[in-house]
Length: 506
Image (cartoon, rainbow, N blue to C red; front, side, top):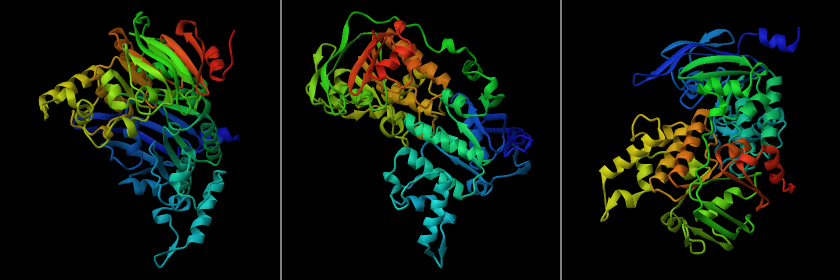
């Protein structure tokens, strides 16, 4: 019997049957199904709000289902909490890793019940030996005594994997594991995941990056509106089919029509240089969407930070709507001049997760919501209501903490607070990173609506199809400089990739 046939015939490592869950009378899950085999990487896909996160929380003991069954290796189980699920071999690793940065790698791997001790005294030699055994299973060479906070993102991910293996995890649930990794680190991660698959570990892979899914995964399950709508072998599907199933429309409808640029110059950048950025010059017009691409480390994000006043520059000038900014003007001065930044790291730089939607929007618009030193609750409510309506933020109320929202809705809150300032130039760093296809389409439509009303949008993206689809014009950076420029209608991925590697194209 072949290995593939044996895997297919084995009882599912984890199975959800008819799972339903509602909150405040609204169904988050409605008869959801998922079946993951031993030695399989199974993608769980769907738009934000489709029910993926709720299903994962049910499977890991965070939530108790209202109805339905969970089976572990064919036997029905109930998980009263996360600890019970972990003891059953089911471990979830989230995008925000639960690494403790101030203790060593070895201690992170063997936290809690796994820490070897005698009479309340930690047995350090046993701890390090057992921690090293887990790293060896992952083919990782990470110093055991190093503080976890000093590791690279991919090393921190590997330490989290090692901790899960130390807990004898047989089912790993990964939530956007590549969100903060470089291409090289992603390749390294995939090698580890394939090794775990070969050892019989079942992996549930939650991701919005469909190219990764088709490269790595064996099967896919797609959810929509709390229900499971499709389970299929990856080899029998296509990216276009997945997108259509997820959002109910064809991929060709993701990008709206272009053509809103005017002849009026809104932004002029001349000879701008910083730590990485070198002698960058370009202009952008009112109503134009300018995409900026390039490989990791090319200087894209630094360029936006300098333009936004968040990072000082060495030389060069920035002119917004005819007004030349002072050298290294700072964020406040730049905002007042009409240029605002939506940062890449929305959770750490774009929002206060513990604060409400309303408070996040108000804090960025104090001048708008106050008069003579007095804050107006009515004005706060008004701009919050308008922002949530315009961007279709899905939340229980304006008083819901932002940390409880999905990634796509967190991004919308960041946008709402910046758009309330009515910027002439909106800078967006990876505006769709970590959000689903449907929400991406909403962001693209929003960008085009802003451009149609005269806003200039400068957007950095790592995805070449996105750059071509959402932009009027694309600038590519290589080693801190602009290496190529193309109108979107004349661009293709091959041309832009050549520019990314600094190759001149005749």
